[in-house]
Image (cartoon, rainbow, N blue to C red):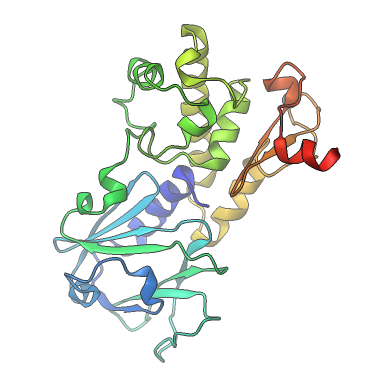
Amino acid sequence: MPELPEVEALTAFLSERLTGRVIARVQPVAISALKTYDPPVTALEGRTVGPVTRHGKFLDIEAGGLHLVVHLARAGWLRWKDSLPAEPPRPSPKNPLALRLRLEGEAGDGFDLTEAGTKKGLAVYVVKDPAEVPGVARLGPDPLDPDFTLDAFAALLRADRRRIKGVLRDQTVLAGVGNAYSDEVLHAARMSPYKLASGLDEEETARLYEALGGTLREAVECSHGLAAGELKAEKKLGLRVHGRTGLPCPVCGDTVREVSFADSSLQYCPTCQTGGKPLADRRMSRLLK
Ligand SMILES: [Zn+2]
């Protein structure tokens, strides 16, 4: 799933290509992706694109007072096309195309929003104010916002008795960090994902704050200037523990381990993060019995 750094890079990529251009056509293909009906998507047609911004993992394309807000979810992606096919896209269960946006001009450039797989989560909203999107309205502070200080971070953690892994990826606590970067941030902070947020002392809080900003800024820098199509590969290259179960930790060489849950998993390095002890994994221990 694209997280803050990828969506940030996508925002920059689209700013260069969309701002100042006129939207010619918006064609929803997977109707389930469209979460609003008033104003209709066609209301975007003929409007000039203004700023392209980001709210957490949401992409926000402003056009003449309206906002096209997109959440890519797990398997959604945006594909830029210098020349879109002229014939209208046909909806079909096998077609990953969710929505097509074409700009005015002879080239017929624009983008396709696509979603692979059967679990459909990609969401598109057309609103007058991005805060009308429930997921945007609920977002916590953005970790790259200059106003997001160590004190602000400490205040968020102090009140939270959940495990730190879950807190970091909760969008209502912090905007933009998901399963991948929460693994990376905890690895950079040399901290167990099972630690309780409210139990962190001052030094640990400061270490985690540094790791959070550092990891995200580094990832944004790495993906900056990349074309939309290259962002996913770049994300994978930069990851140290996430999605690397069984591979050596690039810091200490220990084997990266995994804990599985019903709908997700986390990865960590025992030597770097848990004093060399593997974390309890109920599913794994059941399998080993
Ligand atoms: Zn390690």
